[in-house]
Length: 144
Image: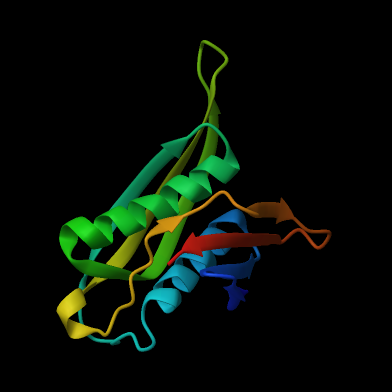
């Protein structure tokens, strides 16, 4: 379980694994933090909740990472130490499928770290799939 940063032309990619869907989402988010900053302080920052809903798993991963980038910009904090508590799929009365994520993260003031700007998450080459052993793998490219 974990992530690996990979050079990708003018972008940066994160390749991640996890024993569960929640674990792989958390690993990709940790990869986003690592792409943004070489050293993350252990002691600083308060935890806050993150909730995201989307129409499929891939969109949920995209929207979760996009929300973390948005929160970085609006809170002026780097989200780190990601904990994805639950990912649920539901079907509404109209037959529409919705995926819902509940997570928390710790916000480190940007002034406390030497952060690089990750501009956006992309759908380019995005991959999220279950592997034979029951775990999950993900590959996400970020625009830097």
